[in-house]
Image 1 (cartoon, rainbow, N blue to C red):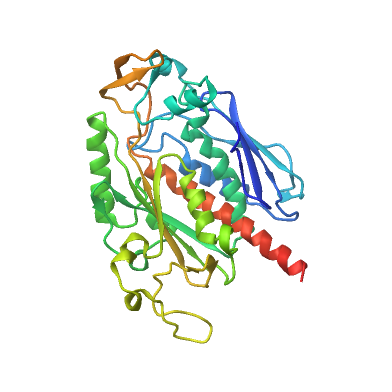
Image 2 (image 1 turned 180 degrees about the horizontal axis):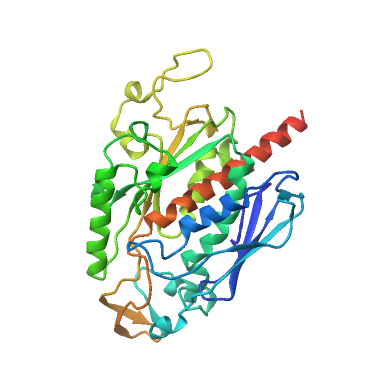
Amino acid sequence: MAGNIFGNLFRISTFGESHGVALGGVIDGCPSGLELNLEEIQYELNRRKPGQSSIVTPRNEPDKVNFLSGIFENKTTGTPIGFIVYNKDQKSDDYKHIQDIYRPSHSDFTYESKYGIRDYRGGGRSSARETICRVVAGSIAKQLIKDIKITSYVSSVGEISVKKSYQELDLSRESIEKYSIRCPDSSVAKEMIYKINKIKSKGDTIGGTITCIIENVPKGIGEPVFSKLHSELGKAMLSINAVKGFEYGSGFNGTQLTGSQHNDLFYNKSGKTKTNLSGGIQGGISNGMDIYFRIAFKPVATIMQKQKTLDKYGNFVLMEGKGRHDPCVLPRAIPIVESMTALVLADYWMYAKLSKLNR
């Protein structure tokens, strides 16, 4: 299986399955001497772990990370950082009923079509539990690029959406973490939670969007042509389970404007602009303004309702989901979005350092 490595200079390689013994990875390219706050890494994992509230899966996992190498006295040594997170609460019997059946809109069918075999227990490698490794690496990347601030929040659930711009919201950690849905708009957050619980009670699932804002990005981050900053961010976001769309800056709404309406006019000699419909990126390179983007997540494929589907023998059968699943992935996806963003920026940060050395 290819595709288990992300990044170039700051790089992560991951392994593990949802119902295997453990998941883990190796981070390569992290500079030496970086003092790590290990509690902050665990905090980010706790934001991602299951069992946090009534609107996520009740699977009970401590998700405690164990570092195996590359860190000495809380500082990076410059050698590969190995880590592992053990699975503690697998209930593989919950999946025996689908060992020969493909769940609609799930990777069951495509994995077996490609590899001729699949781990039906929780989806194996296709499970979102794989994102634990991304969060560990992304948390270290965040500490590497500590002057850059990355903030995400749930901006819509189904048809319920935050109407305020991100500039109008309190995006402090306390405000975002106040509600289990991780939406900083109190009245909207309560509507979202009610909606998810209602959908869950029917054995169904629901999707929505997450908005991410990156502040304090220096000018000049990104590479033209094939390695544009927004294309790398898009790739990172679209690699996350259940993501169906990515837009930055004005996004699709920008298509409804004319050039004179859409252009970001300069207002000072440092290059600051009056508006920021470009989303902080022009020509694939950061311009010093805030970078902001939105990611669309589909409803979770496994639902607790009977559906007609296909088995591996070509028969149409009825199946109903069992076990523990998220009715909505959005609240647990927040640290994953931030981690993937940090990994992209850490890679470009390394390129910038290398470029200065070669001048």
